[in-house]
Length: 390
Image (cartoon, rainbow, N blue to C red):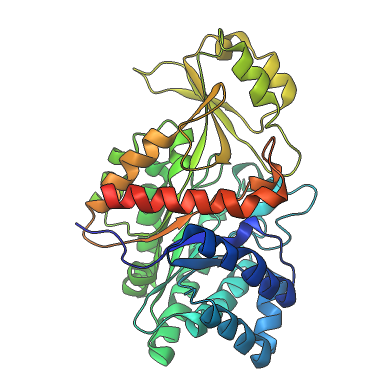
């Protein structure tokens, strides 16, 4: 029973960076400032867009500058977010964030570049993790051989990570991140897929390297939005020998009693924004566990929902909100699920990487970019306090 002893990481995908110079500037002006405000050591959970990985891979000088920047601020980097491939801060991201999916050699090549870069950035004696898309978005992944092709790519990645370990001594693990309405969204789907992945790997004598290098990123609010019991979810993964390589410490929005909470629905309408996808779920009956969903929250839906949604007990919306908040005005959050998940993570026989990932500060109602570093620091302080209490 343990939790990671590494400095708590926050995911830098909250900051836009399309080239190395922007990344270096962010580390100085944003990440180092968050560390100063937090008044505790933090790690930089770097997001490296495809364009940034190419720059760094082609220029030893730029890579040296990045290493020096991290060292000068005493910020280790042990995990990367390789989920968004391209511009994560364009006007409209939505379902495009899942492309290229894991059928694509572009996704494989990008992830290998990330792994090689992380091997250079890792502190001595520390393992690395890389979070990635949950294979693809369901609506864009209808081909009958989709999962087979994804398995082929993931098996090849595992082999490349194994070679990288032989060459550098660095252990780097992939962390596939289930998300609502993606090919992997529920715990049951993750278990089924890992059985398929292992069987396919066995046929090419690669099961051991797959088990060593491929696992999950457990984003707490994603499973909460699905109305999963997160404690049981984590236990199920453990029982099926599916390793959680990384935990995203996150909270989502919950609207309680939508019929009478008119103020809450009106406030919720302000969270319907054009950049990110906000998958929205409700549970028709807590006894049956049946859920229904819409792909993306809209203002019209929030203010004038269908009758079955209006009569439900609550809605949960995939909009990352500050992890220290039990409520946002007339809206609740899924913070209780976060507390339960971290208790379950504490009881694992190993210590996954821990990272706060609230990437929505710049699109949150009432927030401005000037508030972001202070908000991130408040999240980090609250998370450190939470971990101390477990």
